Amino acid sequence: MGKRIVLLTVISLLFLTCRIYGQENQGIPYLRKAGTMKQLILDGKPFIMLAGEVHNSSSSSIAYMDSVWPRMVGFHLNTLLVPVTWEMVEPEDGNFNFTIVDSLIIKAREFDLHLVVLWFGTWKNACSTYPPLWVRKNTERFKRARSVRGENLNAISCFSEEANEADAKAFASLMHHIGEFDGKEHTVLAVQVENEPGLRYVSRDYSPMAEAAFNKPVPAQLMDFLKKNRDILIPEFEEIWKNNGTKTRGRWTEIFGKDADEVFMAWYTGRYIDKVAQAGKAEYPLPMYANAWLDGGKAKPGDYPSGGPIAKMIPVWQAAAPHLDMLAPDIYRADFVNVCDAFSRMGNPLFIPETSFGPIAAENVFYAAAKGAICFSPFAIDNINRVPLNTPLAESYHLLSKFMPYLQEYQHTGKIIGFLGKSGDTKQVKLGNYLLSVSFTGNSFNIDSISCGIIIATSPDEFIAAGSGYTVTFISESESKPHAEVEYAYELVHKNGQWVRERRLNGDETGRGSIHNIGLRMEETKLTVKTAKIFCYD
Ligand code: DGJ
Image 1 (cartoon, rainbow, N blue to C red):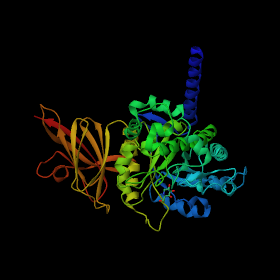
Image 2: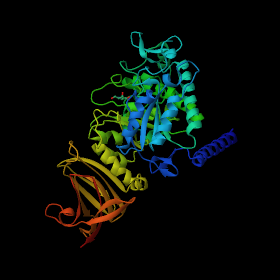
Image 3: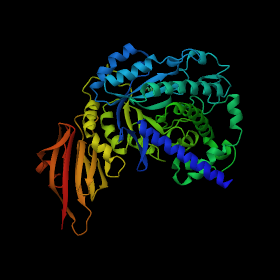
Image 4: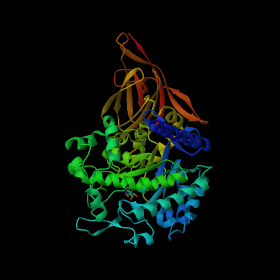
């Protein structure tokens, strides 16, 4: 028995190595461990998506998209997130049509862009409005979720095996096609499986299948995962478990008490999506993720989709959906930093497929990039009526795309910090050999007046700073040499593909208030990149 297990383990390790090696060999984009997180690797290098998501209906029309592509160039994007819907690719049972998919890929290449495909299959915003009509109309075959009163809802039940199989089959065909059409060029980098799943208006499904599952013990697969990962569990989830006595066996309500409905829905929604992702990966193994409509404030499960991959449900989703590589927040909340931090736990790579497209996006992207995000993508980027070109976002993307080599090199090394701050606030953080005191001075390049920045320690005494509207002071931590001073500082300007030194900075540019020559001042009026070397003396 023991020998068999060892043999099986060796075979699966070999299989896994071959798969990863195979992916590297064929150049299929994949995720590689970096520190405690992961990076997306394309052509041997980390790829960070400075992206935008088009509006839900945009990609349904090739003609409409024709007007979108040229506009995207002005944003300095490298990636566009585009919906591909089940009704679009399988309008009749078993008849597939990939005309729009091919057109999206061809056009993206023409405009030097990569794509993330958003699979609007069974669910989009917790409803089932994107499955083809032959699915939506057949409620007998594709069972709906039900309300407490037993009424059918506008969402297919995650307990509908027929729907799960049909969705997995359609998704597998799509991935097979993408693999054939794009397996060499790698225009498509990743795939979102469904969109903001979970169930709205009720905290759980009350269909007969759901009732039966709810009255059964919690599956051992989930409990084993929780036991195995007890030391690294998301604290908010651990709390739920603890509140009910940290039981390892029992029914949903016995183990998870008042949170049972949400955990139950997270498990079964995750299982459903895992089956879809698994079928797709078997055809073409791109990185895949599920995105979350976030909770927050006083919202209860059902106000937001109950069972969706919100931060505190990360452990349940990781257990339920091992074929997903990431759980991704759609961040429309004001506490952007908290959400990024919350989704960077338990090894979950940070991937932001949707975020507000206000001027604040231009600043938030700095924090996300330094935090190690694989993707930052404001929603409805093609909504040109609201968004003239030369937006603050375009300026940020322009700078960050040139700053990319630094991000690629330093993301996840612990030598990079990103920050956002309101005028008047200060923040202290240790980096290299120094304690950095950052004072936020506001930002006139953006009406939100939020300062944004990234600082990298390229050596223990040498720093590169990017952003706008802050002053950083370097404080010595050495007891024998308690004073710090700037050895030299320069503004860096991007010319002929390289960052070159231009103005040598001193005086007001390196001083702060009456204490001179200990830092860098990043103007409020524009985005800049500067470097400084610091020394200490007694
Ligand atoms: C979140 C959804 O995921 C998007 O598809 C879109 O509907 C936005 N909300 C609208 O704000």
